[in-house]
Length: 161
Figure 1 (cartoon, rainbow, N blue to C red):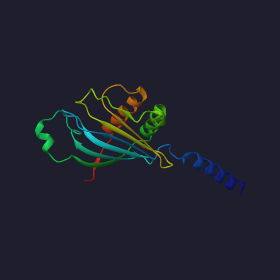
Figure 2: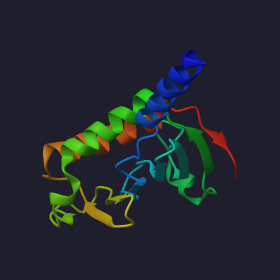
Figure 3: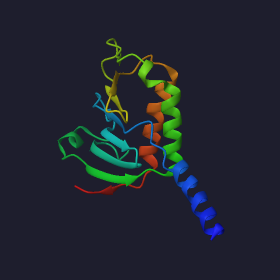
Figure 4: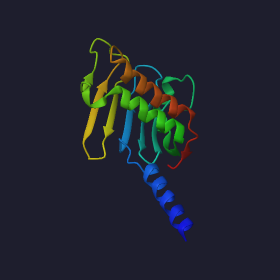
């Protein structure tokens, strides 16, 4: 009987340490069009590691032509981010100190690059939105957006619409 209680206590402690609340309810990254053939998309990753990709154009092909812009959007896709990639995403987001960053890093002198938006939703419901363009931004912020794009590229997406 004492072994049963010991086992239950150990399992209880393990479950408490593995069910930690994530620091981020949702991480969204949206990339708008450029004057070329840049991928246009919105990716959303929630605290359960579920990912949704709203793919508009140039996400699954290299190169392109003007005619590709008249084609229908590529679709909506879903996937699950690996545990390792999600932990790294959280670590990079932590390092960026999102709440302390400016709300905009738009360089109005650069007109032909994509405009991007990073939205972080916290467990308490508060949000931080950062608008960006090409040009200077804090290195940790650039590392975060680059990592989100890297994760997007290596996920095996399943088309849902």
